[in-house]
Image (cartoon, rainbow, N blue to C red):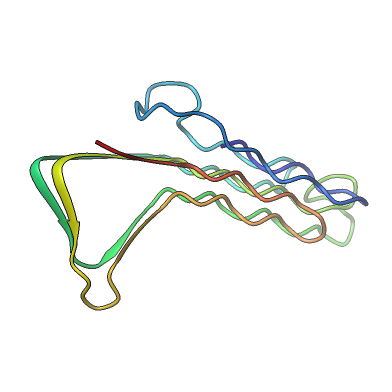
Length: 133
């Protein structure tokens, strides 16, 4: 996904999602940074390969984008007096014969969320990609 737009006196649009390739070497698979000097970093790429079975018991696999910085009193973070844009989510590609989730101690999560825009008015980053094969 693309990072959020730079904030300003008017509401900044959120970042748009794009890309559909599970291959981490292709353009569009890494999350992009948010707009402005205080834009959040984009999520990365995670490849998980299991020849037969992948079992998730608890914990987290994430390629989330970072949140945008809030505007400083002088308005420096996002430019134009607004907050920085949130970074977009990255890519998580899982290749396995079977995938199962066993719910113990809160379960497991797999996320590639876009980051929240900084205050005031920073756009949120677009969501990333989760690919199962």
